Amino acid sequence: MRRAGTRLSRSWFERAAPDVAPDLLNKLLVATVDGERVAGRIIEVEAYTAADPASHSFRGPTPRNAPMFGRAAHLYVYLSYGIHRCANVVTGRQGAGEAVLLRAAQPMDGIDVMRRRRGVADDRRLADGPGKLAQAFAIDLHHDGIDLVARDSPIELRDDGVAPPTVPVTGPRVGLTKGVDTPWRFRVPAA
DNA sequence: AAAGAGATGGTCT
DNA sequence: GACCATCTCTTTT
Image (cartoon, rainbow, N blue to C red):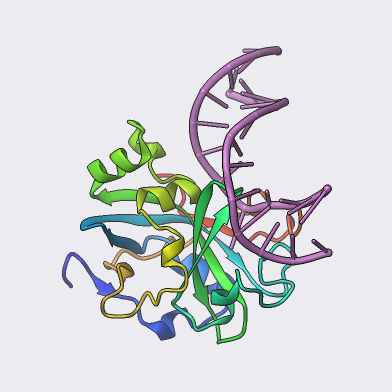
């Protein structure tokens, strides 16, 4: 297998979000925006479903959450707290309203670009939060709804042969007031 | 090391 | 008009 690995297929995403989420750990996120390519290994995610009161899809489709009710392997990007962007990967069957929030990544390629975009020197803080990840990878609202498995997609998810952790760290999701007892946050254990 | 607060704007009630 | 799937900086232990 090449070092860059293989792109994940759409069918790979057509499973329930809580099942896709732990499998997304250690996959590569690759984004080419403004001619600059950056890559990182996904190390923290959260699952959201339509049956989940904490999910944007809980109250049914709206203009904002429309991508969550579309086909799997599309991107759902929203503005968080009026300031930050958060990137999700749509999973499940069309109409299911499920997605996985990309919360943190370990920078691999284009680290200098990430430093410039983030304006911080500490490499451990480049993408260790959903808003920071989106900023480091330059994922913005104009990426909302794009198809990650389209051949010309600027953002892709790849498998370079590193398996997900056999026992991911799980816990409650962060920053919400409902659904706090659902342990749908998944993380790669500390090295 | 931990806790608090302000920034800032779309979305939905 | 309230509510955020957050981040950073400042203040306090």
